[in-house]
Image 1 (cartoon, rainbow over the protein chains, first blue to last red):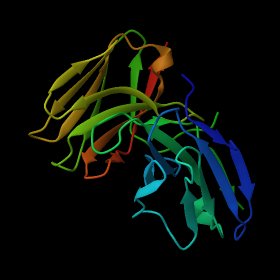
Image 2: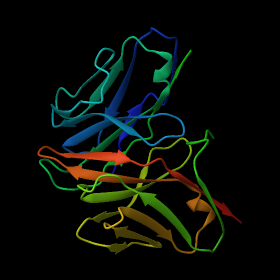
Image 3: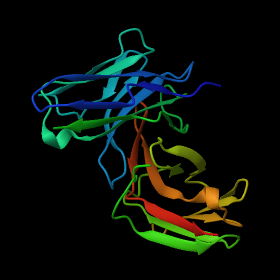
Image 4: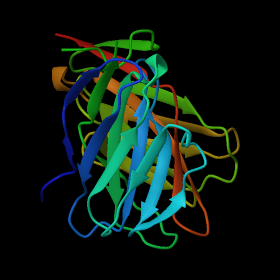
Length: 116
Length: 114
């Protein structure tokens, strides 16, 4: 079974520029998550999709971050404009469950973003 | 490779010994718990999970213990190998009406000495 695919693996931009990350979840996984992982910390949830709908975006800084999952499969996360504190690894995860139910989330290897 | 975490609590064990990594969780409403292993430059990798109606679950070389009374979770790794060196995160999951919310702990770095 192919895992969660993310691209690019690395991205370096200057502050105030824009950047986008792409995620392809495990086939058949209804739920998709974006996390931010700052060096030395555990991942922090930014947004959760179920199919193409947003379930939770309460921790997404909506003034600069946006995400979409238009066809309920792939997803993109965008930052515009980037700030220095956005330097982190952005992880995508997916899981099987729909409504409720406990299933493990499976992670991609992330995109490491560096802001200059 | 780059470090996953620079200032994490560190557990150093000899190859072949057993390792015990501990985690305190915060939310008494959490009903599902997961341990993840994260190597440098990689995403968290699922190791084992446990639901709140259990207090112990065993996998291959790993055992998770859950003590809901004191909100404590532990991961035991038997016969630790150099390949087990990584950062380990516990995560608590609270079911909601639509999906789940996973909250990660701060992580522990496991170093295995040959």
